[in-house]
Length: 176
Image (cartoon, rainbow, N blue to C red):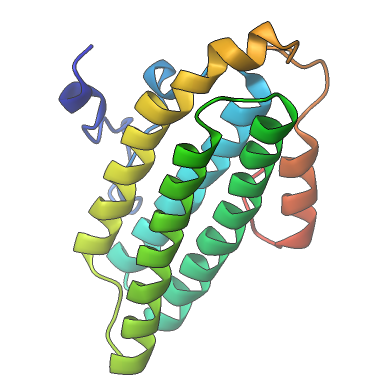
């Protein structure tokens, strides 16, 4: 399936009061490893929460709170991925880590600018994050799956994601 097709905002039927999600989890976004997919789904959930906060005009304070959560969880997710890459000897570790660092730097710079200038979060930022997340998962993250599986990572887990459960407990209202 072409990348452009999977980046669409294919929304499930919704009521008038519920805005369509910015990004819908589809099988095309799966890397084929349940633990990583669960973390990616949580990132998608947080991005959608940010989208809803802006669309429903819950105020810039609410949107900034969700943006902080998204940044915090992204750091945790990147640390998990990078740890697995180091432990499993992933050959493209340095390039992958650099792409993580670049995104965090860009988002933190945007966040500082929003705070310093007192501006609200824009749809431009949302669409930047949507595109980056989708492309990063479907191209960059998928590239490590064969290596991880060959090194013994289990594609399916028998228990729910520990990181997702911990994050849900640590962040009231976070998606489960």
